[in-house]
Length: 530
Image (tube, rainbow, N blue to C red; front, top):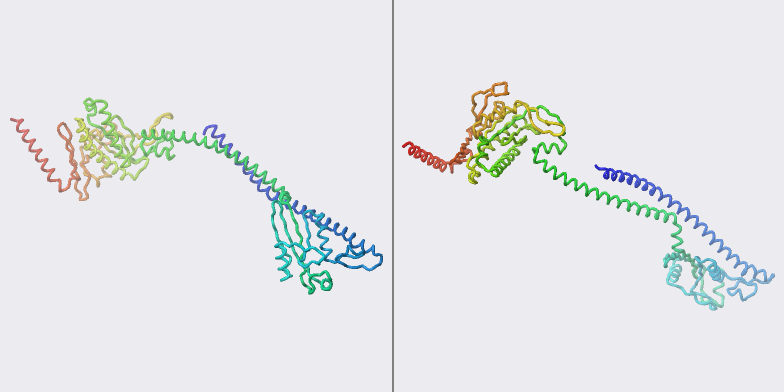
């Protein structure tokens, strides 16, 4: 991780800590702001109600002083009358209905947000008819049907004004009934006690702006939260932009590393490559002892082959040979150690193993399949102009080796060392062209898989014990017979015959061709002798 990436990570951590602190402040600030607003709203409502009540009482006192007390005092002991038109009679005072009507004007004059209204659909004849709206008419009808349902409330919003209307009934008492049923100006003379004569309505209005300002602390809180949120979004976007830039750099670096690792994979065996890049194998100078099965192959007379082929043709043939043999080795689970000129070194048992016996069997199966495939390749190469076929000798040995990283701290190689490796190379050297020779240690593991015969014991340089090699004849069929393979390639001859693949339908034709070839060889021999 470079300095820019480290700085970005540190900056991200600082931002995270800042975000956590801000979140805590925000969470703590909300209940505080709400509590302050509720306290402020409660205080303002109490103060407003006190002011309004004080103003209303003061207005009623002034009205009572001027229109009731003053008129009574001015009578100086004379008769005091209670009249609806009291203002026309000296010393008279208003009846309750008149008092209610005039109080509506008194209250509305002093209170801008409070109105009082006393209305009836049966006014005296000398008074103007009251105009009723739909709510008042429906409320009057409902109260006359069921007076006990009051109060009736209607809430509305008009522009930036909130309004509430409360209606309650005006119920006739005994004095009211007596007055109205006998008064000459009354328009209804059959009133009864408990009848609803009219309604009184209280209307309270409140500007929305004033209600909103009651939540000033919450508004300030949300403005602060919005500011913090916008600042955080801005910081987050900057952080995201920086992260995107770093991600693009990392993506480019990853693509570069992927390309490099893909190139490196061509220089390592797939098992070793996987172990290193998965972290299973530590890249250090260390080895361990393991029981392995080692395969060593070499092309017979390769130096002579190089003299008969152009470098370009030879390169194409040897690369195709290595490609085909490597594919077979990987198919059977072998670890390709290296290519030494025209030789191939493969081992089984590291880094993955199925056990010494199964590793040996896999190695022998691989060697037999390699010889079969080489025979097919020789036919193809002969058709492409390669006159001399490839004849490969193979040696296999099983034993303990040192396996791991060998070399220096700057340059190392994952390989195997030990006398058993040298023995597999010696076995290869005594194998016939196209043949496979194994040590007794290997043969002991594969004796139920292949048919083989022992060769004379030999003493090899660097090997202290006497070695008894075994030449592999072929795989064993399920019935115990040997699946023999005949292969011979030379100038004018391409012969590859796998008896395990020849069935009864083709055996006669093969026999016929071979008999014809033998007859032709006999005739040629007779002609040459004469």
